[in-house]
Length: 420
Image (cartoon, rainbow, N blue to C red; front, side, top):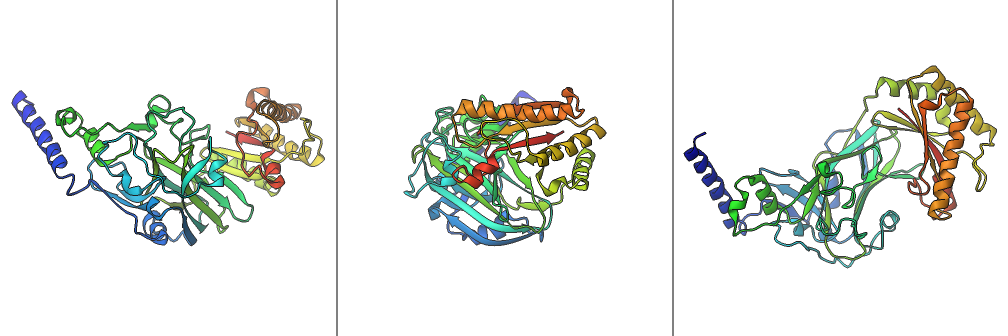
């Protein structure tokens, strides 16, 4: 490319951006509608149109201006179409990014479920939920999280919270699908930002209509600042879970302010991305699950598939403040697992101990670790090489049920075996 043609191309880019700026008041790069019914949002926008899901009981809780449908007309869109849930007004997501403190109090309450995983009191909760019955054995959907709390409030303990609560209606078991990575970290401002997991973060620059030249070398960045008000985003992410075909589930997409009702955040759900399909298991997964089912282990414990791993959830009956395995039923279960592992020597197992929230942090951390090591020791005594195992405790940091009830605390006191 010659110097003259390069200058001409730059001039075209400048003219294009100037045109965008001059037309900003007449036509937004993104449109948002908050007058769409929850039923339409779920059935006509979120679902992929397949017949693998039967949906009922669609509901929305929160301010009606905190949920809507969006369509992005920009060439540099993060998501083309879908649903937006906000802690404020969804229309405030519209660019340009000309403020770093956009927020609006909706004067609606927070949410108890969100509060249990938040760092403080919640406000302005917006929750879209529905029941569904899958025909296949997994669900998944795509999303982006965005926030005005970037970058000033990273690690300031006031992060807005959101979650995708999936409830198995028959058992009452609830899991949060708004997590990422092998460690299952929650998606939030503290865990994804310019310094931590930066590959999952997109910074949104301040829009400057008087300095168009700054966008010449990166028109996409300029158009992003023109399109969205939020100061930062995650990249497109996927959430999902194994499910039991023909069982009933309820999913709740929930978001709220934490600590105050300022500095809004939002979740964008991709149109047509909520799908139900049969998973493709690896050969190792097929072996582990088949062996466990043949031994009827799955009749007394939970088997959970996750990517390339299989997790077996054990509710071992430890005495209070004790780490010794005493139940003969529990020993028989571990004998079966040890026998399977001896037959397939390339399988590794991670042993994870968990407690309820009774007691202080250090106490629970130590107790969960001792119980995990007790299970590891039992497997070693039954012929399993120590090099094939790892054991650690998580205390009360990873509950799978409410700690407010005895039944919930009983579920949280467990040992998970993760086979790899």
